[in-house]
Length: 94
Image 1 (cartoon, rainbow, N blue to C red):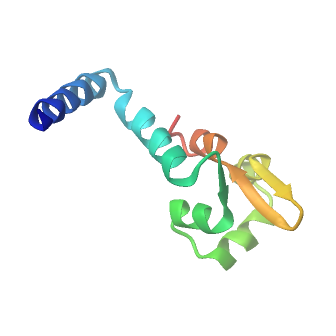
Image 2 (cartoon, rainbow, N blue to C red):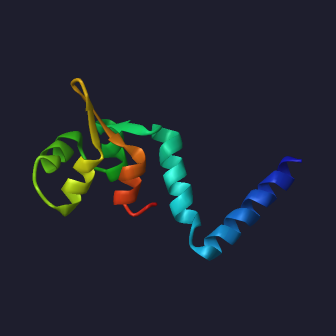
């Protein structure tokens, strides 16, 4: 029975890949599953493959990309979070 489910998953993924939607849907969903609706700075650094200090310095600068990332920023007290769906949109995953 498990083999049938795996075949169905591969078939549905294959049909989605033909339409060009699979990568964006799978990646945004995987980001949401892994990091929930909000991701902290450490999670963002792992997604962007940057060091925490390097990302902090970059986010304090100006630029189109930085403005989009900072628009997804949410500060709760001293903690900083980023909206996962907006980060996926900035990265072109959506």
